[in-house]
Length: 254
Length: 76
Ligand SMILES: Cc1ncc(C[n+]2csc(CCOP(=O)(O)OP(=O)(O)O)c2C)c(N)n1
Ligand code: SF4
Ligand code: SF4
Ligand code: SF4
Image 1 (cartoon, rainbow over the protein chains, first blue to last red):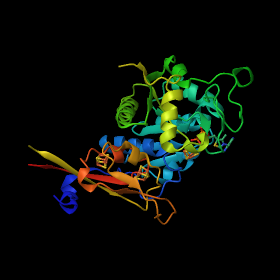
Image 2: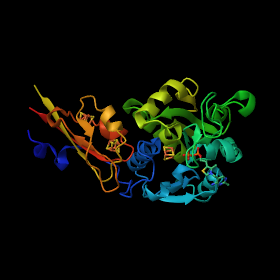
Image 3: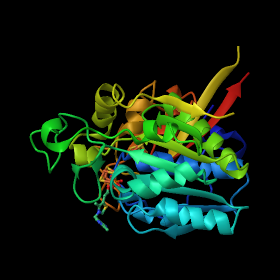
Image 4: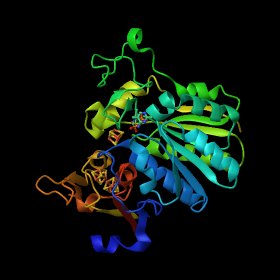
């Protein structure tokens, strides 16, 4: 069988999701952000919510997320995405409202907005990209940076005595009455990507069914900030991030 | 016995040469160019072992930029 005989529309089994447009994404080669964008697009398409989804993009590398997925978007001030999402969802309850935030945005400047939106049980989903660093601004220490991990602002490694301990926002979220589904996933391998997609689907369904607030953390790589190749960054993440940020569901209020 | 045959098409202008698809392919079907770059200056993934592909879509699933389309047929 020749290549031409195989490459026919009826044999297509995978393509870029339709909601992801052809604008080239500005992310560094191999950045986890792109994989998560694809999953969000696929889930929205599978749920038939193309005309009902409203994303809230953050300040951070994902600031231009609205350029890549053809749904409605709002751009929030740094850390304020959950507050903006609260307003959108309350004014327009029939919409699927989600935020997309990095760890600097969500776990530092936006800690209060995040915790209070989750605690109020707003019917939104927060997608939390935890790459343990401030990617956009050049790889500074984040609240989520691991102990011993080197960044531009802790060149000798994060030291608890000076910098405090890495913050587990997802564990905190699981203790809040308002949260329906709290999970930690990753996108470093095909099985992990499949699981992360299921988690996003469940969170979006909960948001639409008024079950409360949902947090999907994606333990991610920032290969540029970590100064590694994309494949090495995935390996580093498996070896160093997963023991501390353990994958799996933390709370699932059925 | 039914045999599965696959083929992938890489959008080489969209590709950023991150190499994640190359690492993800269980059958070494893909490799990055070594002497050629696209319009944006990136090396890009291309098929180097055409007949081997089984259309498993691992490469396309891990591609952050959605550059890969996968086709699959069952040969009787
Ligand atoms: C009010 C305000 N303070 C600080 C900044 C600078 N700033 C831009 S992005 C960012 C953090 C980005 O890190 P993260 O949220 O982890 O996202 P990533 O870039 O890693 O995806 C900071 C501090 C800003 N733009 N606005
Ligand atoms: S700086 Fe890091 S998080 Fe930002 S696009 Fe590059 S790899 Fe991704
Ligand atoms: S579809 Fe599977 S076998 Fe074919 S190139 Fe992609 S990863 Fe390799
Ligand atoms: S994973 Fe995508 S962007 Fe990276 S080299 Fe392969 S085709 Fe190119």
